[in-house]
Image 1: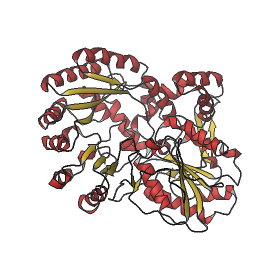
Image 2 (image 1 turned 45 degrees about the horizontal axis):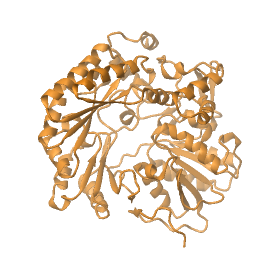
Image 3 (image 1 turned 90 degrees about the vertical axis):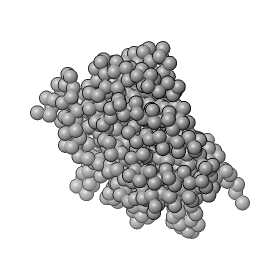
Image 4 (image 1 turned 90 degrees about the horizontal axis):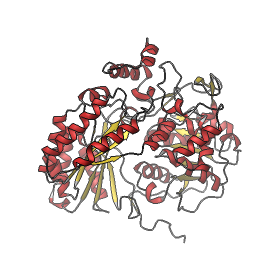
Length: 548
């Protein structure tokens, strides 16, 4: 009997017994086990695959794996962080699979990818994947396996052409991208012939039973945690936010029918509960959930909660969290400027932020973490000063409450109204200004790495030409200097760093993901963009001229 490489796992589903003719499939997470097994998305996809008797599923991480088939037919990756592409390439090499799809033969597995990074903009990684699954796994995953079964014994090209007919399945090699020049913008993206769909639409699950952990383990980054997805997407629609725009519409788990029964299943194997979602406390029955958690039989349960909406921070919420071993909450405020919050559609006032902090302290919480952003499109220096003023006033209003301001640089994301904007070239100096102003006030300031934001923007807005750059950079390291070195080496063959990261793109420009349909059409995103620009002190002329 083979010893499991994951002895501490407690499964909350029953894996199927594989058929004699089951498809050998490897499902990988391109990071260490402790990171991958903490991903709810990875857990759910693995369980969905492992519950099928027509599959023989083996898991693969960068540090450990189950017994792997010698001739896998399918290899899947769940990708949550952009820089994990390095590990994907390393794992492909370790399995003796060519990095480029064009170099793979019929005996190589079909390599598929999914997850938030690849659903948003798969193009920088298009050369490494045969197939992308765009959207919610509840719909597209089984459809992919069923479609593969129909062409399992055909040649590779027949398989890919068949898979491309399935909604939400994107086969990048069947689409040709032409450019206005080697280092210029995209001219056209088109299917190679009329039998291939011209657009691929992200698939959206619309049910009210959302994801829950399928395994609990002490080896997870969040030890022994059972995760429950309370809501999916976010109704606020901040104009920079991928978590809202890409995943629309806002969906909620039914409290009585699915959420509470799911929690009860999890609490049979652990006393640690994680409530997940971009806007957990905006569940319309969140009070009912709090009442359930406040029952005496749950006194020993430790509860962790994702970022909460500011105006939903009540004293009751704070008391409930304190009772369940949580000492702080996290709220996203973005800025202390009302004008800037109007630009990004953040429906929030400084008074509401202050009241949230007062309620948090009154309920017994010892700390509040706030998230802000520097370099937001339309931001002026005065907006930064208003953020400093807000934090100073907050400290006076709630003495004794530990305040932390985490601050990132604005990064444009595909399928959002701000996808046409580049990174603000002054963003790093603005982070430094906030740090200089806040730390002497006793306010902890945690800026996200500006260099990492630049790399993130590059991959967020990248096209297929970046595949050469990524392979070069992989051998140089993942620092910004490594990327600059690779750009220098490829000068004249691809656009420069400024094109991808800092430039505002005209509205008529073909975007790398123009053939991939998100939750909202580009015309709607442009309307939302124009609503934001109407609040600018100095509107960006290139965008306004392009919209005329």
